[in-house]
Amino acid sequence: MFDSHCHLDDPTLVAELPRWLDEGASLGITGWFVPGVSRERQAGLRGLNAQHPELCFGAGIHPWYVDELGDQLLSALRDAAEQRGDAVAIGECGLDSGHAKRAGHGMERQVLAFESQLALSCDLQLPVVLHIVGAHGAALKILRRFGPFPQGGVLHAYSGSAELVGDYEALGLSFGVGGLITRSGARRALAAVLEMSSDRLLLETDAPDMSPEGVPPGHNTPLTLPQVAQKLAELRGETLQIIDDVTTANARRLYSV
Image (cartoon, rainbow, N blue to C red):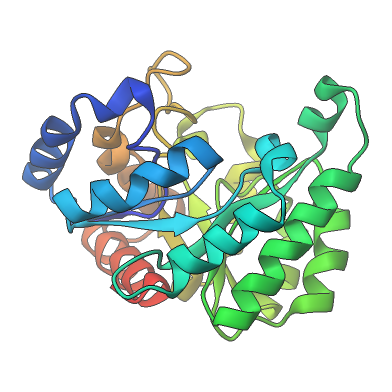
């Protein structure tokens, strides 16, 4: 299995990183992708990759931290992505309308940061890792201006409807499927995974967030990936081995690892 999106650099996880990697390997997890989210945490990802080559990482600014993205930081993201052995994707970036409302400002800053990182993804021909929450209509309009994306990309923790799956796939994008599908009330997510093409499916934990059923919010770990895989297999009527093989191959192809 390949965890296509987990925040192993989060302070709640990084102190025990060797444990997560060792125990994850014992469960059959062979790869992890760690997205860039902020200026502070981006700086540490190269060091984690040097210590643990089984980790790959992205260069990006999460929509919650878009105030940090100026010309200097955008240049730094480019440098991180261009140097051999460094970032394998741009992101996580995108739009989050709920956060904009909580922060008391509009979406303009997020849109500018999103467009800048999409342009970088296209320029460097690297996949883009997307965080889209409550803004699928706006996101699709922007993505259509930049796409289709021959380099690919992934909608991490996909929260859109089943009806939009085909629109995103037409742009060359894949879908990260995580703990949300294990929750009994997640009808929208359950419907969406049935519409996704097999070659567009990725597994993820989003640890320490997106806790599966039975795990307290904020206490998710990378070791819950088998739980997600098992649920996805049940929903799609496929064997666990097929889900493991297909999603791992998809992740390795997307991130070129």
